[in-house]
Image (cartoon, rainbow, N blue to C red; front, side):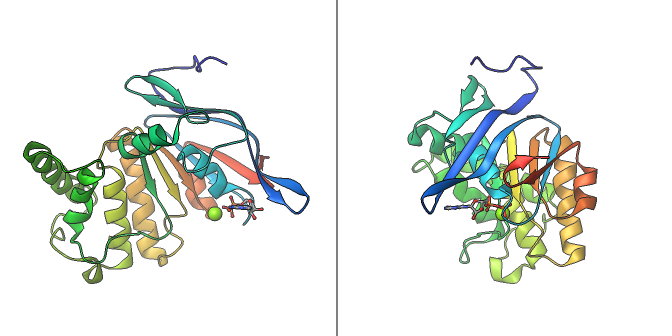
Length: 239
Ligand code: ADP
Ligand code: MG
């Protein structure tokens, strides 16, 4: 199949008939069962469904962390659409560094680093950066911490941050490389209601502010209702 033709300049992610199965005794279970979807830049898609319905599996496919059995997963890049279903591991790792931002339920920050250093560390993932690149990363880190409301907390280490602040650092870190696609897997489920609501507001605001496509896995119907579109999964299939 060729790359999707729908509004190509604005489409960040387009999945076409994606199937992902896992071994289950003598047979296999479909964690993602013929899913097609499209998310444009500046748009949000909520993925809902009961526990075990395939939400994380779907997100992992979009994140290049899991390769589907079949189907296409088109990611828009500066060099044109790339099918994540067929890219090499090395290219997938590169795309995760440059084109895709990921936020998980736990913020997964490095305890010894300050908030700003968590972000700056992204510039080291493909080797020692030049002085100019380090300076640019420092500037971008400051700008993003400001954007997520943590401009004054850049020098604090993880231990000195609240759960909600940590998750906002994780969101800022996911944006360090200016991704077209931001993936968030239940990013507020480890937070209290108020901190969770602040992180949700932040994510939905960023969709427009940084013109990113957001796939947001959530248990919360009220959060899903605020997204531009919704996909409800049951046993891996949209219903
Ligand atoms: P959700 O995020 O909606 O809770 P998951 O995507 O984690 O759902 O899981 C979907 C289905 O795939 C479940 O039946 C789960 O047991 C199965 N599954 C997920 N990951 C694996 C794995 N690594 N190996 C085998 N089965 C898995
Ligand atoms: Mg999950």
